[in-house]
Image 1 (tube, rainbow, N blue to C red):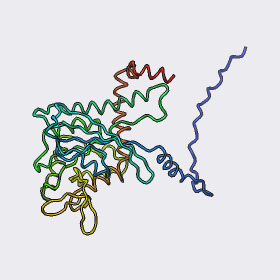
Image 2: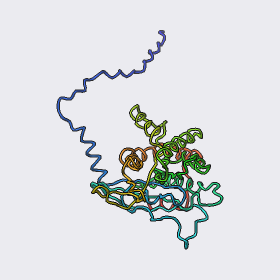
Image 3: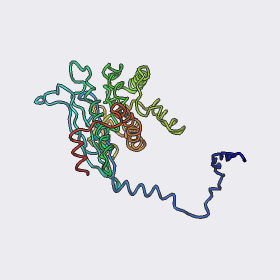
Image 4: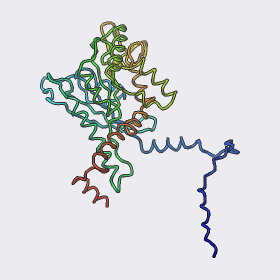
Length: 337
């Protein structure tokens, strides 16, 4: 009787390494039109941008944002009227606008924080701001985990926080350091020195260097964060911003004056006109180009790919994979079905 010989075990098929293929095209395909397709889609749907302004009253926050977007997008306020009471706690006020330029629509939301830093005791006054930022991440997360979720989830996440530093010329206050230390972990912070025209050029340069040094010593990361540079080109460009421009020393104004036959935005002083968009006078133009013309999309991507994802991972991990179902989410779920 012959013995049964087991069949030899087949070796797993190892996929062949891809061969080098000549990528030169024999004719036009049209791959390059994807950029135009994306542009057309963006022009139809528009996009969201949410910017928060934080700082003591009287630093020109609203005026600067109005100057930045060349429209009245933030509440007009030059301080508190005598009839108004200073809020006992930090308030959060969000104002939405749709602005359009060159056929591109942007839903801009400006989040103001009146009452911040205006109390005798400012202990933990950043907590309502941090809570608001996390609430926007929570809203997005709840929409995202719905079984039948919206085709386009409303984006209320804070993409950028302009933090206004008082132009003391000395050093950062403990409140400045505490705020940026806590909030830099959840939002993109861009520090700006307000009302820079109150300092001489020498004082401004020294103060900027001192602020950068204090932020570094205290381990505070501001936007653009070093760890998020994607390549050498990004690193080179962002290093220049981090080492030379930050914090931006700015002047805001929504008033126009005649200078050398041209209408310019500026502030009138006894010794002349301070031109807002003149780099010899202040760094407003650098801030505008940075926030809107070169880094706006990156601000949105870092918000969603880093800050939101960090919140999402922690939230889902703490709750075993899904956020707890509330009455509101149950009702939304049933209506979606």
